[in-house]
Amino acid sequence: MTSSPGPEAVLRIASGVRQAQVLFTSLELGVFDVLAEGPLSADELAERRSLHPRAVRDVLAALHALGLLERDFGGYRLAPAADTYLVRGRPAHLGGFLAFLDGVLHPAWRGLTQSVRTGQAVRTGDPYDGLYDSAADRDGFLDAMDVLNSPLAAQLAEYDWHRYRSFVDVGGARGNLAAQIAKAHPNLDAQVFDLPGLGPAFDRHMAALGLTGAVSFTAGDFFADPLPAADVVIFGHVLHNWPEERRDVLLAKAYEAVSAGGAVLVYDPMIDEHRPQLPNVLASLNMLVWSEGGSEYPVGDLRARLFAAGFATVTASPIGATGTLVAARKAA
Image 1: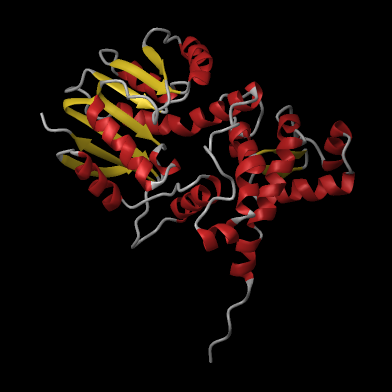
Image 2: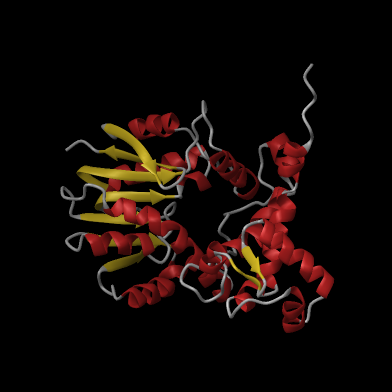
């Protein structure tokens, strides 16, 4: 006689929103910043930050259970992940991206039921409208994006670049990915193409990396303007923001911009319909509620669109923890 399963698996999934809120609240209250200075008891932290002692005890216990804090007789201290990613001012701080999740993306998920019924995003317009309005929010978001794209940049720097002389990273923001490729391959003419408002942030970032002049910035709108000519055009986490017809527009523009024998490189958290990875499917639902017509997509779908755009060969390989890199060559 088999017993019925308990509800723990369902309740664990349902508690995800509460776990996330503990993290967001702790960031907002500066919990990780204070503990970076040394271990504290719950009462000591409550006094330091003028918080309610009993509530702080529960929050710290939750962070401990989540693996973000460790505890001994000296009190609570940061676990390695929190020490690396959650302390304001540290190189790998993810606060800007987490603030975006808490303030922009997760509220949009409240409309998931409506979006599943209608296929329409909760918000309308360009998903990036307003994202860069605040200089502090913009820089925090870009800092976090660079932390997240650096491992991908390291993999792209190992791509077979010997046959190419130039590349352009379309939607490359302040140029972190382009800079890593240019540093590994100084013979390449490296360029970033993005909205004009990102130009000053690009200049500051290149100066901070000691790469001023190694990568150039071209301002423009990739739907309104032609893409800069290059041997390789990179679309990193770009196509999934847009509906299928606009992806086709971008791929056609890439075909025109790429030199004979050149290539377009596309990476996104693409979906394997037979063995879907949860992070990729959730990323697709992000696009559903946040962008008008955006979604993740199967490799086969992108392959068909690349062939339709005129590319001669298409290959796919893994990149990052859950991403796929698709390389399409233009005939020589």
